[in-house]
Length: 154
Image (tube, one colour):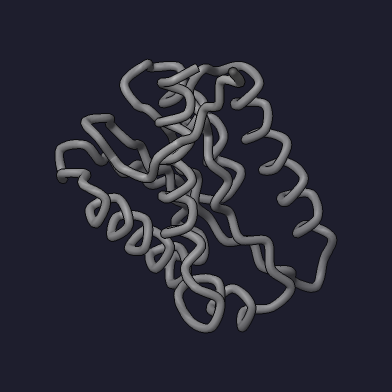
């Protein structure tokens, strides 16, 4: 018989860390609210959720890495919003954040969940932060709970 592992979307008794960028806070605060709402709707109490604010998207990486390595959390949610401007800075920031969060997943037993918006326009970011396209923070929380459950079973 084939053994199959499937994660359930429930917070259980695990702790969840959320690292959120203060840059573009009018967007990231909506992502944070969506993540917290999703976690609490699936059984997490306030004592199970830790929120760490960092200055910008690139600073998510060292904070998330330290949280993942601490062993205190079942998953670390990484929330931010990078919106294209008129310079190439956007590309460098996006590459750094994607690479950094991916590296945490290679090096840690604790999943780091990518909830960083990389948008061409402010309108796209607003749509992904709770308007037309749902809330990427809430989606990251669902992914975090499912991955925490999968990792516990492996």
